[in-house]
Image 1 (cartoon, each protein chain N blue to C red):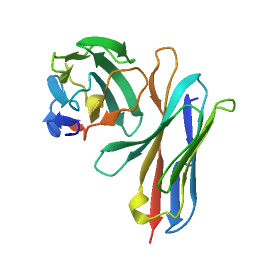
Image 2: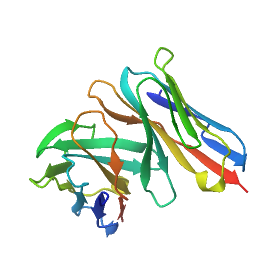
Image 3: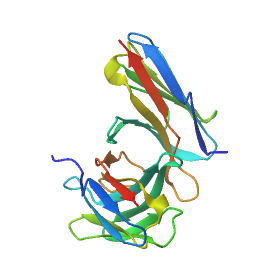
Amino acid sequence: KNEVEQSPQNLTAQEGEFITINCSYSVGISALHWLQQHPGGGIVSLFMLSSGKKKHGRLIATINIQEKHSSLHITASHPRDSAVYICAVYGGSQGNLIFGKGTKLSVKP
Amino acid sequence: KAGVTQTPRYLIKTRGQQVTLSCSPISGHRSVSWYQQTPGQGLQFLFEYFSETQRNKGNFPGRFSGRQFSNSRSEMNVSTLELGDSALYLCASSPGQRMETQYFGPGTRLLVL
């Protein structure tokens, strides 16, 4: 079993829809990253959080440390949000980043 | 500030060869981490350098090595290339504290034939 599990693996939405991507982890962590990767490979860090909730524009990330779960929400989705979203945690015995397999989001106009 | 740069962007090698990839961090950043991304395994941590010292290492064979220079630029080397080393290699930099936001470069796409 992977230490970081994301769901769903693939997600297709219509423009304007509210989107939720989930991340569950089994290791003790210090912090959690949400990353965005566009075709071509470049990765952008969207959020790093260790508790509560963060918001940036149409993106909201929440984390529940007790339940070892985080969610990334996108409100009023747009085709430019189409990308792979990756959850990564600082945890495990070495404290390095451990990555989920990613959620591929496609937003149709 | 200029972002993280990686060179080369694309590389084709044959089995048994070695390769060196370069990463220049954001100015002022002292930590550089390297990651391998493949379709099967996803993103995996290779190693992290801070102030010219390897601070952390992932679970990769000794064929994968790296170093960091006094200007924080970093190189990683893969010797005796195998087909399975074909991947996107990403580096990321951060100011230097552990477990902080990382800024990723565009990656080097390596194809081993």
